[in-house]
Image (cartoon, rainbow, N blue to C red; front, side, top):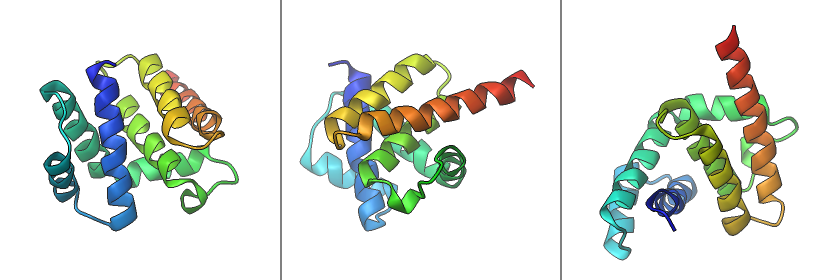
Length: 139
């Protein structure tokens, strides 16, 4: 497993904790590092994902709402919601990562950590988001 995949899995766990408890992102990361280890490069990328996602959470959640017909954020499974948040943060702000890599990783993580429908659900919303993102960039 590459360091980015490991970092995404860590970030998902921390984002889930923040979502479930309302914990401060720095506090949630500190708690994670007290209990789990990660290679330095995975740790750094996980911190970037968590802090960046939380810094832009309002903007990201608005974009998810635009792309999720018939699904409010509250109705989404917490795992799926946080995978979407993290992937959209990556797509918007981490331009050195190929979009296909971000999309594929999000879908795979959904299949691993979510329900049997999570991969398809995450794929559908991210596909809609990515299509809208490209339409806006073309105009």
